[in-house]
Image 1 (cartoon, one colour):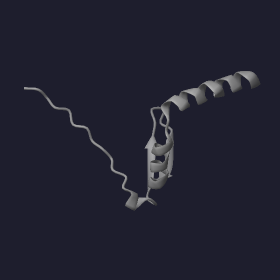
Image 2 (cartoon, one colour):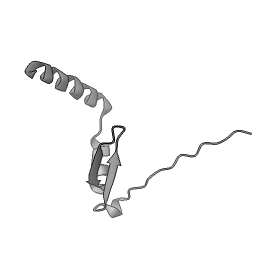
Image 3 (cartoon, helix red, strand yellow):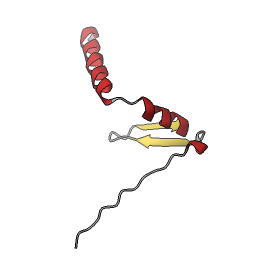
Length: 65
């Protein structure tokens, strides 16, 4: 018999746009923002541009460092 893995989801409905959420990353940095801000962040996220930004930021640090 196969074991089926269940994935849980957290729903952040627009109707609770002023409710605050806390997000923790792998480094245990915590980010507090409203549901509305979390939704907006998802809308503007672009993985390819993020990689380009990181490269540009590293170049800037090398330049100033």
